[in-house]
Length: 114
Length: 114
Image (cartoon, one colour):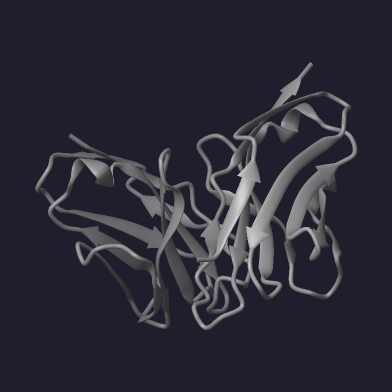
């Protein structure tokens, strides 16, 4: 079965430091990949998505993610963390089959330390 | 443009009861998807409606059902509630069908089953 794994349910970084949130997927064929963010008491917001056009995908709020087929990874990065980045981040995958059902990872809660 | 709205925001029910949740998509959006979010299972896709037709369905029992009206508003119904149905139910709208299109999420309805 297709799946997506996010390493680390909680990640803490200092303000101004690099943010790295890890996501690995299992798929024999490169799927659609997404990163969503959820702020407290809110729904999800799309940060970025990979649809095979380019391996480095730039999103909103300074985030970007790189698709690495050899590593089946789609890690999310931001060069310098801001306090406002504190939220829960979800990696999601849509396998390239007829199913078209989106599968979310368990989420990583990002804490920003002053 | 107004965002996705969900009503009610909070709901408390007892086992065996049924519940109906409502979602109003962004104006002009014809696709509405529903998701269940729990601490244990994470975010799981329930179903998608587009132009009043169910286009896709997740792996949930038949107690979970939905419908979409001609104005694209959608309702989700859960019958014979169980304790495990306690969750945040998120609705998302999109201008086109398919999870690979950008979805805009509402704030969710938090259902507590006692």
